[in-house]
Length: 237
Image (cartoon, rainbow, N blue to C red; front, side, top):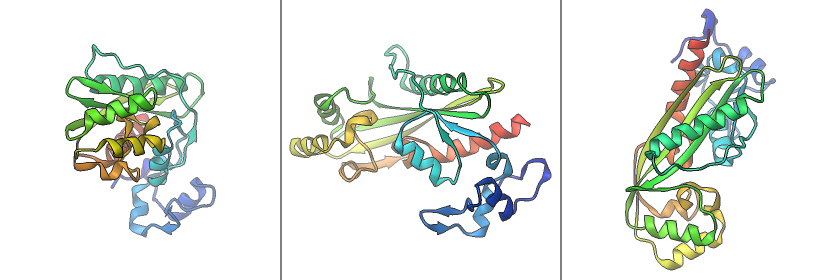
């Protein structure tokens, strides 16, 4: 557990105040146990957070943490540099997205993220079209690949930043051509790195094994982000 900033005590009244009258302990219609409220220090509750992404998955994951944030999608083009390793590509793209948005706001902590799927030396971003999505899924079928998600925090006021990357190993079972066609026809793979979503109805049953952070495969490594954000805000004081 992280101690509150400036020696303040963490009380539910402060949580209500920081969330516009709603307790931060509300998630999916249920109230969190009082002990879990201690996880949300005033450092986080009173900081303006800005998500530089239009991804509905990242938005949902941040809401799952109980964080309040605004959306300001980045305009940075997601171009993978084949000369760089996938971890570096993911980290630099995440930082570029956060910096892009931080240049357009006066204050707040901007959050950028980018996910890349790597199969050996082949890096896979989002599919260009349905044919490309089918190609990617055929490549992944029956093999193990690595999902890299880079995330970055940028203080818009000072320019101070941090950028990190998380990796998770994922193994696909052997997929039939019919399964691939049906999944692509659903449209679900088209906005996802590697042309699949582990949280999708079909994508979930394509996977045999996951070694590492599950949420990293969804698109945002919650635990590492949360720890990094707390440390970043402590250094801000």
